[in-house]
Length: 114
Length: 114
Image 1 (cartoon, helix red, strand yellow):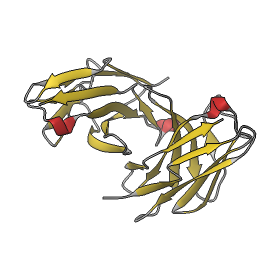
Image 2 (cartoon, rainbow over the protein chains, first blue to last red):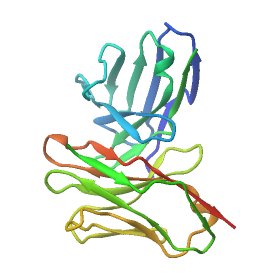
Image 3 (cartoon, rainbow over the protein chains, first blue to last red):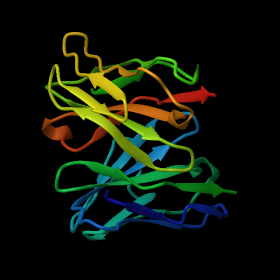
């Protein structure tokens, strides 16, 4: 089946620093990738839709300048959390959409901001 | 807007017991419905789906029927195994301007004891 990877799987950073998370579709091309945030014991919340070669579409309430998304190729999208603060600590999950309109999910990245 | 409501967990069962996890939805138009499973330490995996009313999705002994009249998509399995222990998410994908976006329920933790 299709595989989506995320890197890093865990990251701990100091408040005020920026963190970049990569999402890669390993064996298929994805024109659309999605970024989600998952709080403990809660559901996935869609943050933004990332389209290759164009600007990301953010969901209401998600700060564009804080969560920078770049989808530079058909197999890579990145999420950069800028000037991270403790309230940004969360589990971030990406998914990549195949040509058959099915979404494949990455294993997630646990971000802890001290 | 679109929303998905799952029965609250956690659900704890003995091996070979019957499983039902309720899921109801609110959506405009005719959404596609999904069940995803998240095993410990892994990303979400598609378990089954149904794209129109009265369709039954099935996989690995799990089944769910798209009931438009009750706006439900309950997950069932006749005999659970310890290996079924995971978090289960009901989700919908609406059409129109929400194309491609998945809306998730809050997730239900299932624990199966030997």
